[in-house]
Image (cartoon, rainbow, N blue to C red):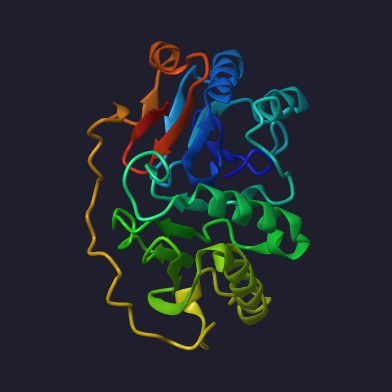
Length: 264
């Protein structure tokens, strides 16, 4: 589901907003909570891909009314109407905040910008997923279509479907992933048998490579010691909880484990 392609649930339209790497300006959450109050069931939901969801929205002829779309746009969380379904970018939520081998936030921003700047990549399937692990191992075992795992402060190994790709300098990761995404679209086919995921392709997108010895073991949920973390076990951001999270000068990072990190 997306803002421009809502899902017709039993209680009304359901939409999802993609957050690149889980990054969520607190002011955007505040505005989105108002949208949920004015047009939906009053709550904002977290998803397992560290995105946001609204439900019980009005639904007319398969679309949200213009005033609801305009209200969502004012959050700043829909940077590209054409590419909203292609912006599925997960990243280690504590990268650049605490731990990890490198700060992947610049890589996430560049990857998002490159995706949106390429008209052809708007055709990526809505479930096509990029996963970036900053070397701590929290996302290294997540299923992905394309991604990367940081090996040291300067290099990362690409992930291509269920396998491994080349070891590349960190500043080249975004461009390499975009090129692989273009190659996927060329290889996936064009009819009802078209592949939705890299693992479904009959041919390989890149020469297979062994996992580098520096690839970390899967670590699961990271430690939040020394970090202001708000767990949201049921994945529901109620108005009261939104009020607790929103503060002057704060930014937020939504985690894939139903929680929110408040950045300093």
